[in-house]
Length: 241
Image 1: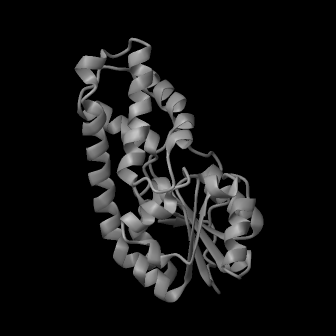
Image 2 (image 1 turned 90 degrees about the horizontal axis):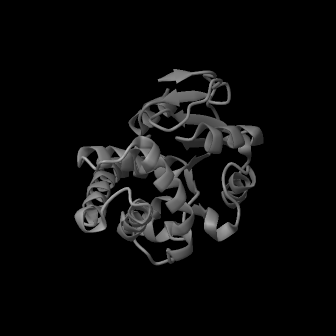
């Protein structure tokens, strides 16, 4: 744990990111998927994988429905990655198609364990603060939160696909703050993306906790992060100091 500013006082609300924060405890999904490609010895390079990931992601939002589960979301993401790899003759379809389900299931089980461990801290936070969740998601984040039985802890949930604004636009955080009926200086924003979570939240005057985990890119200057942690398990101790 590190800090740039010790003064996290008069806090009334916590605003969480979901993907890469609550679900994976600091591992960006681009890296989490890649871990399983490596685990199962999928014969592609990191460059080929990254191209598949970037090509597939814009297609996911077009097909995901509001009622779709997290399993369905993961499966759709992995499907479009492999679809790119098959269509570009990087992998042979009839040899590797079964890995779509294998990787999906492994990712889901990992997330289920992480969220189960974080459910008790979330309850603690919700008893003490108002909680909001702000996520660049696919329109089904409320279904996903309900699926993992953590929806009851959030008084406000903002899904980028539903409001038509995505991080790093600060306005998506302003929506959450207004719904919480508070002011930016009374909010702490917690997220794994320095560029999408920390910088826009800080620009509004929020306090910030950056979950410094595993991602494609890292900032050279972290002055907008009031605190820097390596796991969501550190949040409770930090706020109690």
